[in-house]
Amino acid sequence: MIAEAVDTLIVLGWALLAWIAVAAGVVTLALWTVAATAWSVVSGACRAVAGALAAERALRALGEQPDRYRPPQRPSWAAA
Image: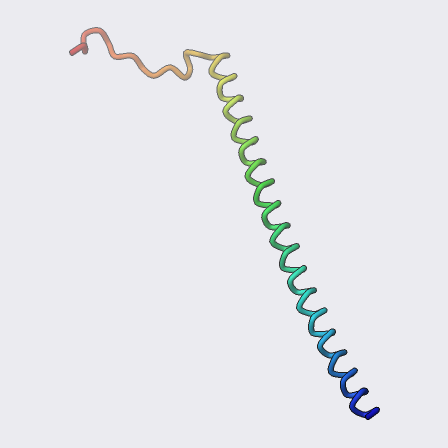
């Protein structure tokens, strides 16, 4: 009788250990997923801000030197 109780406790202990291992794996995977998603969002936001700043700098440069960025005009004799 006592041997069966000890055997049952050992089996329950292994089952508890397996549940703890599975739960730790699931929690770890969930945390990695959250971290990767957050990194992706932050990276995209940084790229968007960098692009907006580059566009703002280009517009500012265009305002400072408007003739530099004007496309060449066709001569009057080349009119169709």
